[in-house]
Length: 187
Image (cartoon, rainbow, N blue to C red; front, top):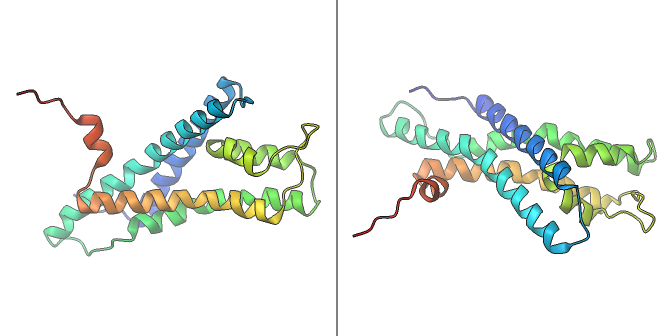
């Protein structure tokens, strides 16, 4: 068994995040985007977040589990923050997408970058629409600095999930594996 570097783990987290975002975009597009029904929006956003969580969770959890065993036999030095560090690195490209909102706020561009931002962050699109709602006429309003900060902070889920997944794997805790592979034992 060989250890995987933090950079390689970050790349795998980033690729998983991109895959989840792409799938979220397809789901949002197929379901018809948004409804005025709050319950449907809530359920759809919950589904998108659970799916997003699952995509990002897997690789750091497996790495944590693998490296726990390598540390036990003395082949690897302990680094409990590897998942968090990989998540922070993986978050950087998505964090840069907030520049689109800053350009809109500064008046450099029209509102079109907001549409691109929502597409790139489709796993959060319903949350983003509640944080940065459209005007009464259906046009997107210019976001405030507070709104930009809040939607940018949503990207912190990437290192949070990655760090938690690695830590759980490192500790031998596998809640997803336990729920998926659990068999009914009848006596």
